[in-house]
Amino acid sequence: MNRAVVVGACAAGLAAAETLRREGYDGTLTLIGDEPHPPYDRPPLSKQLLASDWEADRLVLRAADDIAALDLDLRLGTAATGLDLAGRVVRLADGSRVPYDGLIVATGVRARRLPGGGGHVLRTLSDALALRERLGPGRHLVVVGAGFLGAEAAAVAWRLGARVTLLEPAPVPLAHAVGEEVGRMLSRAHLDRGVELRTGVTVTEVGDRAVRLADGEVVEADEVLVAVGSLPNTEWLADSGLAVGDGVVCDAYLEAAEGVYAAGDVARWHNPLFGTAMRVEHRTNAAEQGMAAARNLLRPEGRKPFAPVPYFWSDQYDMKVQAYGFLRGHDEVAVVEGDLAERRFVAAYRTGARVTGALAVGMPPKVIRLWRRSIASRASWDEVAGHRVT
Amino acid sequence: MKVELEADKCVASGQCVVAAMEVFDQDDDGIAVLLAERPGAEHLDSVREAVAVCPAAAIRLVEK
Ligand SMILES: Cc1cc2nc3c(=O)[nH]c(=O)nc-3n(C[C@H](O)[C@H](O)[C@H](O)COP(=O)(O)OP(=O)(O)OC[C@H]3O[C@@H](n4cnc5c(N)ncnc54)[C@H](O)[C@@H]3O)c2cc1C
Ligand code: SF4
Image (tube, rainbow over all chains, first blue to last red; front, side):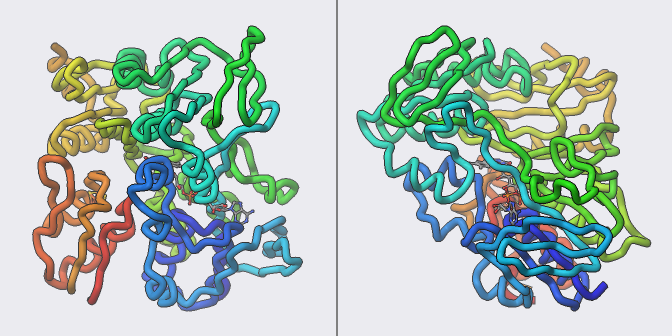
């Protein structure tokens, strides 16, 4: 391999590029990203950056000299617009064509919008800067969607003195992901602070200063934030012959087609540890998957399946939520350590006969790491959780 | 080898401890602490892994 191309220049793409170099690849390495910025970190966008605790310069993932040391053919501010699988060429918006021997797709996801198309979204640095400029004491922020992102933004806006209304279609926010009890406990954090949480309401149209609900009611606001999930950035792959379906479809080795791998938020792959296909939008997964894709691309003869325990964290008010494993579609949740009401607990998740997930708030790291190990070792539920339920 | 840790960036993920147990630990709040600022060369690979997986870009390998 003499020409490696990575499309998408954030966490996953950067990790892939770094790994290729670290593992001895010394051919041409092209990194293509449509944003103008060098690779930066997204999780602080809804946390430290939105709160003005940090400025944008703290979000860069690598110092300029670390990037320079990678000896990249770096194409920032340039979108990939097409892929020719047979000819092994990536087409760019500026009309150029970049041939490759090996390709890694790491184009991430973008924020979903709702009919009407108004309001803010929160995915990029410019999104976050635009929203932050408009928040402050006395402002009324309506957040559509009380998932992790919406909850984090609501918490920061509250801290900045804004009046906040959260609108959520489900009866209990996040219940589909973390279970009802934990979801209810997380909701309480909003209510305790006087953040208004309206559940069971569906927003049908979003303007910049108001949203319309399914029953016709109009909720007015100074600012609206739409936080209703994301869409994989795969349009540029349409008609390429790559299988796309809620992400780039890959095998357990992250391979999507011969010589083409995917990593990060955009990749849907078969995780053998859980025996299921998944696509996760987690910061650590982006880096780990970028590394794994790069290794498999570079050494197909020694390639390894990508079988991680996904990890996710979220900061809401004074709580740090940490979750390991694959919680979605679980059969049972049990609080196995601590106490929900005290906001110090570990909840374990069962799927089939195994413990497949754990979510912790306010617990010491050693406890959390033990649960991670149980998930990684495919421990049976009865062995580790069953007898500890109080 | 010299390792630098920006503790105020750390998000307490524990990924560095998983990658390099001899070099990193976490305090009671989960914030990473360096067990060795100049770990031996045998830890180079695991420290590199920690640098790469740290979700906060809080770890830097300043010299090999
Ligand atoms: C506000 C916010 C808060 C978050 N908080 C957390 C958290 O607390 N914990 C956690 O675990 N995760 C969190 N995440 C998720 C985490 O940031 C992502 O999982 C991670 O950024 C994924 O990295 P990636 O490289 O796969 O994709 P991205 O970061 O989306 O990067 C993909 C890049 O590719 C570019 N691109 C897209 N299409 C093209 C194209 N055709 N040509 C060229 N370039 C293209 C995109 O513009 C982007 O720059 C958060 C995300 C956001 C937005
Ligand atoms: S990997 Fe990074 S964020 Fe996680 S505990 Fe270590 S230093 Fe902190």
